[in-house]
Image 1 (spheres, rainbow, N blue to C red):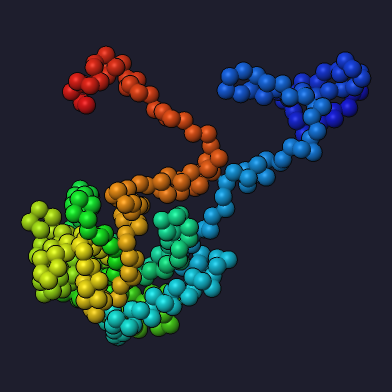
Image 2: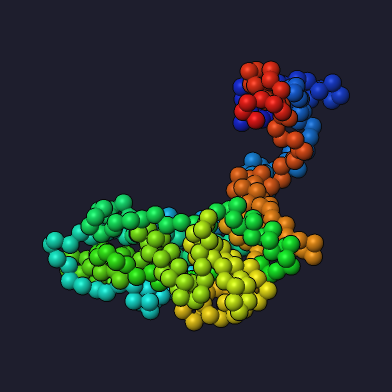
Amino acid sequence: MEEDIHPEIRGENRIITPDKNNNATMLCIKIIGPRHPTIINSNINTANILPYQQIIQAYVTTQEETPRTYKKELESPNKNEWISEIEKELTNMNKLRVWEVVDLKKDYKLVGTTWVFKIKKNHLNKINEHKARLCAQGYTQTNGLDYNKTFAPTGCLNSLRTLIDYTVNNNLEFHQIDIKSPFLNAPLTETVYLSIPQGIKLDPRKKCLRLNKGIYGLKQAPLAWYQTLKNWLTQSGFRTCILDPCIFHKTKPNPIRLYLHVDDIAIFGKEVNGFKNNIRNTFEIKDIGLANLMLGIKVNHHESGILLDQQHFIEGLLEQYGMTQCKTVNAPLESLPAHPEISQRNPRTGPNI
């Protein structure tokens, strides 16, 4: 009986033929590719062929996994780093007096809490920091009881582009600051009680937390923060744009314009340090300097102007799906629509174009 020299390869794609040169048995594997079948014979030195697992590892970049729950965080290889972030978050909340511990009563409607973990990357798509946030489970809130209005405006992207264009044409500076823990600085008008979060050593059967300020996940937190920041800017002499409530401007002593998007503030003007020093007296900020990443858009400053791109976003997707070594093409889509009803019309004059 003929011995199967490769018993692990079975099925219709296995072809055993005699070698005409030395009368030895030669194993051929038929590979069905995108164009035509290909025959690979066993004369190839298999020592030079990588196992499947090594091939995958060669193309897929290992990424640090973000814990999805508090329990998973305790099982993470980077447990100490995540625990440090949790302690930092709780310390910051105590510093800002976000809540006060009160006795739990039967008629209290408690809002649940959860921890959310995130790995933040910079404009170069490199890990910048680990972040742990204590969030309220807003879906457990009751309208009219622990929240009322919830809508909070955010800056329009077209407004940002217009301000950048204005900045380039008038030779101004485009700076950026990030306000740390914005919701924790926003006082609440409603009474909200939280259940004891994981990581706080209190008896949840006897104690609860009464919120003085907002936290992430709370339905009214974005609105409370917008009102807090708007009030401060108004007291500092800024006026709101009629068309976009997240654009603020001030003419004296130096003209300056602001674009708000929650905790990100874009600053446009010639003298921006005065505003930074002023807001630093009220809120803790991170001064980024010249803007480099705004709303997921990379900002490149050049002598001739400002270039916006999202190359880092595309590279992040390629890395996520193991396509960093893929072959690129100039035209990944057909230049004309493939649907017959659309292709019969002139693409330049069609009603849907």
